[in-house]
Structure formats: structure tokens, C-alpha cells
View (cartoon, rainbow, N blue to C red):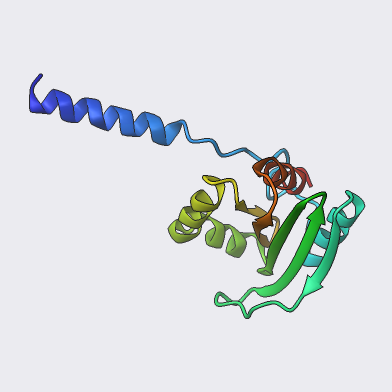
Length: 145
């Protein structure tokens, strides 16, 4: 094989792997989400059997109003950061930012969490204890609201 064929085959493999990544698509689009505030996230998880408490949030670096929660269901414990950005477009820009997408991939690859947008909210889920299946379940719940 020539160098060009090897390089072309390598490029094709990388493109295939990038296109085949496992990132679930939320059941409800971000724009149609019923979650419009951090308290909506709190009560939605409470209604679905999560024990949830409010924590003191860290200041936001991007101007969005921060809220912080600890949630527990079974043996799984999560830290959930919710940033209310005021409007859909600002939240979308933050979630779509390359740095945020990279962090999302890092969290999802080992099954430790993920980042998603629900209306004007940027939601970061980080599991501190539990199994990967619990993360997928929580992200599915949030993605269906």
C-alpha cells in the first residue's frame, strides 16, 4: 500500500469512529422541554423518586444563575449543577461550545455523567457514587422532560 492509501484509510476510520459515537438523543428537544427553571429540575426529580437536596452553588463564570443539587436514588449519588441562562440561545451557545462538548464527552465516556440543555438551562450531571446505568437513567429522565 502506498502512503496515500494508508492515510486515506486512517482518515476514513477516524471519521467512522467520530460518527459512531454513543451519545443518546433526548426524547424531547431542548426547545420543547418543560424544564424552565432550576426548581423545575428539583421537583421533577423529586416526583420520580430521587431524594434531592439543595447545595450552595459555586459562582457562574458565564453570567448564568447557578443552582446546585445532590440527588440520590438507590445506591447512586449525583451532583447536579443547573445554570439558568435567561434565554434559550445563550444556553445553547454554552452547551455547544467546544470546551463544554469535550467535558461532556469525558463525563460520558467513563459513564460518570453528561451535560445537556433544557430550554434556558445548562445542566451538568456528575455521578459521585453508583453504576453507569444510573447515569443513563438520570440523563434519560432529564432528556424526556
